[in-house]
Length: 230
Ligand SMILES: C[S@@+](CC[C@H](N)C(=O)[O-])C[C@H]1O[C@@H](n2cnc3c(N)ncnc32)[C@H](O)[C@@H]1O
Image: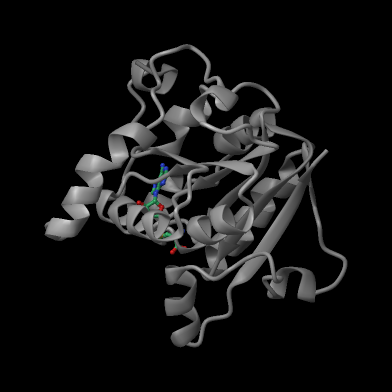
């Protein structure tokens, strides 16, 4: 049991499943997910030991949704080991389809709240982390459910190595301000921003996600924050 579970803190507020999985999706979950699932039984994770081939470094995506961004990054960076966290099984099934299509071998998965995995990551073990379009929980009574919080920023500061990067995107104005406010409170991260394009534009190594595309179709203008771990 994790520290947070032991304290009785609820971690996950979003849903774990949606529509019944199609046959092909269920086949992927049954045949591929067990071998890719990161076991959390040890006190600390041995990241190199999770992958069949040696990895130059490790990147972590939190709440990958249907996995467009994760699949793209894994394909573009075959020498990097990717850890993807997503509690929503339908999203995991979609990602597995993309990984199969690309023959990607450099992704391992955690089908639950990211917090449970992050607390088992060794200090300074992650070079880059992504939180893309996290649930905004807009009602004022629900804001404490937001993933970006002092506690999670402190934990990410522990696991991201100095010089590493945390990328956070959102289309939600209030959450955008909340993210900046919380991140700027931390003396462990510096906002990489010299000019508006640095956060108004994604950059060529940051592919779009499903939620982002839906937001843009609605006429919203997402923000793309990048923070350097000091
Ligand atoms: C709004 S969706 C965005 C999905 C994807 N990143 C995108 O941009 O299309 C937020 C995602 O975060 C996931 N999520 C919510 N709480 C989480 C947690 N504690 N750990 C990991 N993922 C979480 C949800 O299941 C959902 O898929």
